[in-house]
Amino acid sequence: MKIANLRGPRDLVIEDLTLDTQNLGPDDVWGETEITGFKIGTDRGNYEGAENVPGAPDYPRWVGDSNLAAIKAVGSNVTKFKPGDRVISRAPHTSDWIQNQNGPLVKVPDGVDSEDAVWAHLYTLSGLCYRKANFVPGEYVAVVGLGVLGLGAIGLGPAMGARTIGIGNSPIRNDMAMRMGAHATFLYNDRDLTSKLHEYTNGSGVDLVILTANPWPAYRTSVEIVRDNGRVSIVSLLGRGEDDLDFNPLAMQYFYHKSLSLIAVNGTSGYLYPSSDSDRFEWNKQCEFVLQLMADGNLNPSQLITHRLHYTQMIEAYEMAYEREKTMLGVVFTWKD
Ligand SMILES: NC(=O)c1ccc[n+]([C@@H]2O[C@H](COP(=O)([O-])OP(=O)(O)OC[C@H]3O[C@@H](n4cnc5c(N)ncnc54)[C@H](OP(=O)(O)O)[C@@H]3O)[C@@H](O)[C@H]2O)c1
Image (spheres, rainbow, N blue to C red):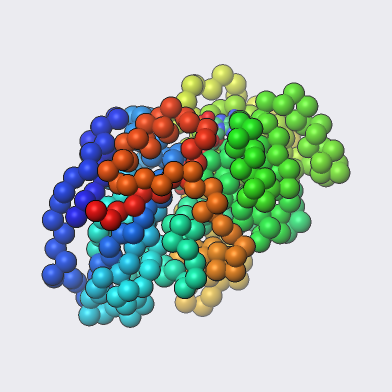
């Protein structure tokens, strides 16, 4: 099997390892990768050598976590999957893998293009930004940062019942947001941003901000534009690999006076009406919802694919991310030799 291994900052290699596919455990599933998607934000930080994310592995480490594969074989206890099924999982950039059937592994419905499905786990995280903030249909949602996760939040907007507003740092990204279904876009450094949002929301203000960018100026934009008593869902790793902050992030004029709720988007969302035996909105179930939207034709992340690269060209993509290339967004790696 081939696997991408990040040995240290800007030291990415493809290694050849042996995977024992002859002795699958009872709950094991063996998959052969078709394509993987580039998780730009976190992986760029890992590639650059930004501080480690708590709980994440140190170097040498795997990279990537959006893997679309076909199942080759299953263990004796496996009932959920059969050979030939296409599945999306959080396996890294690798040609083959073995996982437990009860892990983050979801069958892709027939008719969903692999180039859409490969983004399903990342878009599940975009969806968690709404759920953890107890989003209510009809609210105005501003998405600050228009990378993969931000555009996922925009793409989910119509299905969630949101009026979405993309706030980007490049006109190219704002155009992509409009193509994904944003109702409006603005640049984060627009001097009249607050008044334009006031006008756009008919005076209601932005109810929820989904913050997907690490730099502190993006945080400042978020707490400035959200309405009084509003919420900011923070999925970004604030300040990671960025300049130190030069203001108080909990300054009275933001946090106390506006009575804001700042919400960390990680882990589980919780749900008011849980099932008797499981979490109704555990990760795989949320991922199934995302895949169903794709099956219905209501979510098409493949339209944002800007680069299709063979896995042997992976370093090119990481170097483009390192340079913060604005025209690069959806990058998929193919794994056939
Ligand atoms: N919580 C979790 O479980 C989890 C999981 C995965 C990822 N993440 C984090 O989520 C974040 C988003 O991931 P991603 O893959 O979508 O990253 P990304 O592609 O880097 O997207 C962030 C976007 O925000 C832009 N941006 C930077 N400063 C801005 C500003 N002041 N205003 C508006 N936009 C600004 C960035 O532009 P530039 O390229 O110019 O900087 C980039 O286009 C990352 O921080 C990632 O680490 C969290």
